[in-house]
Amino acid sequence: MSNHILLIEPDSLTASHIQEHLRLRGFNVVWKNNAQDAISAADTRMPNLIIMEMLLAAHSGVEFLYELRSYTEWQKVPVIIFSHLRLDTLNLTTKSLDKLGVSAYLYKPETSLRRLGQRVSIVMPSATS
Image (cartoon, rainbow, N blue to C red; front, side):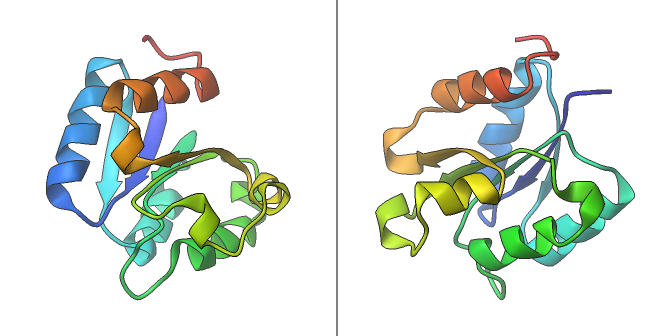
């Protein structure tokens, strides 16, 4: 299946809404609430896309991205960041996000689930949308 999404979201209610919305668009979503469980899930089954919050317990989102890219087999998996952190609050440039394979950086308070779903469909056009 080429529509396997790994969702890393610490808030269970937010995760539930994202999962439901993306499932209705034809995507298979596996949710993990922390970076370590996400690494284990990716090791078990390679995702076609990762959607993640940058505010993670015990592991920053930036640390997760660097760890993810340290594994050869995960270097090309696209990432969409859907976060409560504004991009300008991080010490990351657009160029460094590109190097980390970030396809989009979406700020949650200004982004609807519909817009997130549209971005996912752009990154993973093979699934039904």
